[in-house]
Image (cartoon, rainbow, N blue to C red; front, side, top):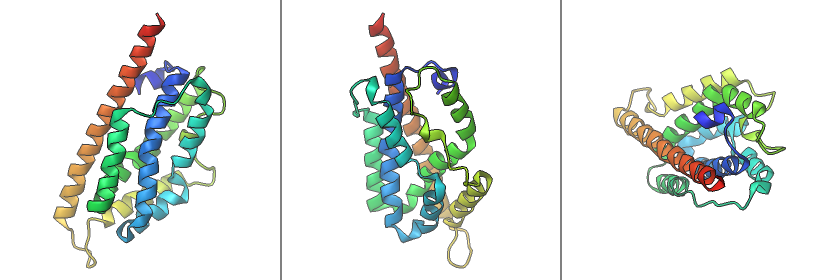
Length: 197
């Protein structure tokens, strides 16, 4: 992320990054609508926050950077983990909605600026950080937080500590998976830099 914000990524680096994120978002956006308990989260995501389609466009725009190597192991493992949660504990997908979509909303403008300033971003790429002009981002942020909070309540409005603690633990897992993902992407970036010397 530091290299992205400094404008130090090359076209193959962007391709790696967009492809890794696509694996995660496609799995989430395929899983969320399958579960009634997550219907409100999906309504908000589908209402303008969904990123898989934009990431598919970014991967296509970056395809001239070289062959797509989609075997970034942490991204593959992350997507498989989300598939397991969708089958075994779908409520925990909320933790990943929190980490990814709220993270996008919070840091989206900074990332969009970095992508716009990049001299190496392939032409036509950068859709990931662009939202529809009709999207009220502060409202989407607030609605998503409220929907996440509601998942920790029962039908009578009482707090369910076991749901909250499980989701908090899963959010920590999500952050750890992102650390692994970014470390792997940085290793690939450095390997490319070294082989170019």
